[in-house]
Length: 68
Image 1 (cartoon, rainbow, N blue to C red):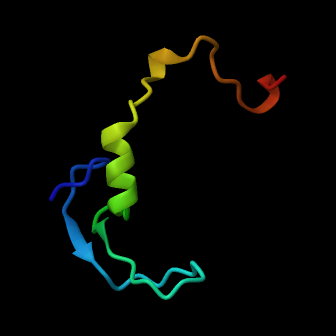
Image 2 (cartoon, rainbow, N blue to C red):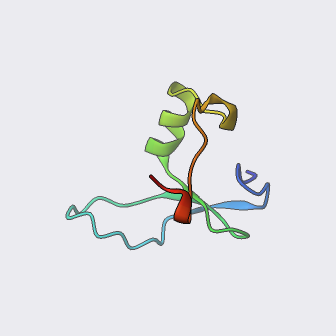
């Protein structure tokens, strides 16, 4: 599988230690290049929810001293 962010190699990894408060195992795809993690919930939400494009913003973002 290729990473959606950088198109690098993504491997199936189940060695993550996540402090979720539950005893369930955590398995996900992890990019060896940029470190992006995609689990089943993230993957499912990306299929259902539409992606916002940068052009969808009606007002430009403000940074630093420009903030209101």
